Image (cartoon, rainbow over all chains, first blue to last red; front, side):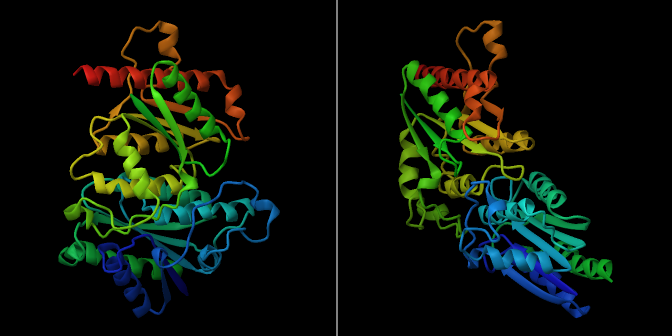
Amino acid sequence: MKILAIVGSPRLKGNTNYLVDVALREAKNLGAKTEKVILSQYEVNPCQGHDNCGSFDVCVQKDDTGWILDKFCEADGVIIATPVYYYNVSAQLKAFIDRNYFLYMHDKKPQAKVVGLIVIAESSGIEDTLHALNQFLDETFAKKKVFTVSGYAGRCGDVMNNAKLVQDAKDLGRQIVEALR
Amino acid sequence: MKILGIVCSPRKKGNTEVLVKEVLDSAHKHGAKVEIITICDYAIAPCDGCESCESTGKCKIEDDMQGIYAKLLAYDGIVVGSPVYYWGVTAQAKAMIDRTFVFRKERRLRNKVAGAVVVARDTGASAAFSQLSDFFNLHRMIPARSIGPRTVEELARERGGGVIAYADKRGEVSENKKAMAEAQSLGKAMVETIQILRRG
């Protein structure tokens, strides 16, 4: 059982990353193989919009998106996590989402049956962000069960003092594993 | 009076560009100086969330966004246009939006007049339009409003604060009379709103 987390936060020690680690640790303890890809650590460029993906076997942009999408397609469960920037996903995650268009144009669906969403805002925008992410999931996955964790935290590490959110993230890890069994 | 058009589509001569140009042509006709830029011609890294701008008032990332910052501050009106990708503005637009965090604390874009242009193939236009409206609102920018006299027909041909259009093939929106009329109306409304603000 492989669980992949795609993280849209550029802060390595931020609240989003912390909760992803909590969820993955729990999943690992329950027997899953886990992996985390922090998008800002790699080159994931925006889609160039030529709308001609169908003519190519691989996306013409030579960056890290290709192998990340391969992993995204192969995982049994995925976690997508982002902080809220301007009432929506971070630009890093939006670039990854837009690049999924290549899969769409090739009628390729990720095989994951379970998706976890983690969305952390400083003060607002969680609803808009979850709406955007759920639209993306509906378009991209054939059939999936979705578990969601969301809440508020501002400064790096604030979330560690939020026992409920940390517990929610731990539960998310367990729920994904149980749903995949 | 200066109005800047920012095209956030990676497609040259695409529908977003056509509409932003139409907005600017109309604004020019009504007395504004205008400039159009295409965000994809610039290298703009995403915000890295360091928040050092909160104390320094500057962004530490030395890329083309520094030049865009100067433009944003210099213009009285800003029209942002984006195609809809996955129920939102493009990642290119989002990178620029996230990088304006540097202006947030002191609301340095406050009272600039804003226009939104969104082009969708079939769905997601309202979500993207809201995204741009929220962006303007966070900066306390003022959505363009048709303040001067209008006929009922003219009012029917405008959308408050922006343009929403549906199009697919490159540039085909220029044949869409309704969308082009909305764009012309937006250009005029931006000029009027800037004039009102200047009068105080």
